[in-house]
Amino acid sequence: NDINEDTILSLNEQGHKIDCFGIGTHLVTCQRQPALGCVYKMVEINNQPRIKLSQDVGKVTMPGSKNVFRLYGADGHALIDLLQRVDENPPEVGQKVLCRHPFQESKRAYVIPTQVEPLYRVYWTEGRVAQVLPSLEEVRERVQASLRTLRQDHKRTLNPTPYKVAVSDNLYNFIHELWLQNAPIGELS
Image (cartoon, rainbow, N blue to C red; front, side, top):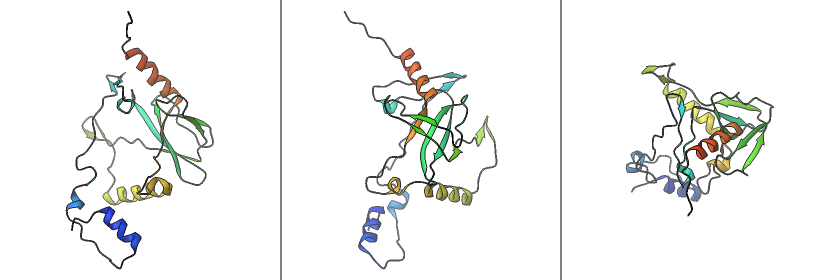
């Protein structure tokens, strides 16, 4: 009755001889998030970067058009995803890259990638298909290959290690420059 992933994980930990699960309700409705929790946030209009400010930094947008790259370590695992402004040169294999937390100034690290994978691809633009869409099998293979590049601690179900997403130094400075330009200035009297 109402079998879900927690039940299956528990059964697997206990050991069993079940070779097939019949999942009903929880196959089509995600128990943990039954509604799609996302929001569209504009970051640029007519080539003008826009920023949404909030006291909750998780709600602050990262302004302007960007590219995103996955940087890999020597062991073949994905280390970090890096957001850059579109006019920046992409990171290069073997070259030191400064990766910064978008809002915490002291959180930063150099990464020397052994592989750089561009993640941003345009499939639809100006009302038209921009490139051939991958088949479902190709999408499946891509997802499985991508999952293999993640460390096990990122994939565990109990207390997974958050995967890091960083911004370039250039994008970090741009975000904070726009923030200061748009943040109201209080007045003391």
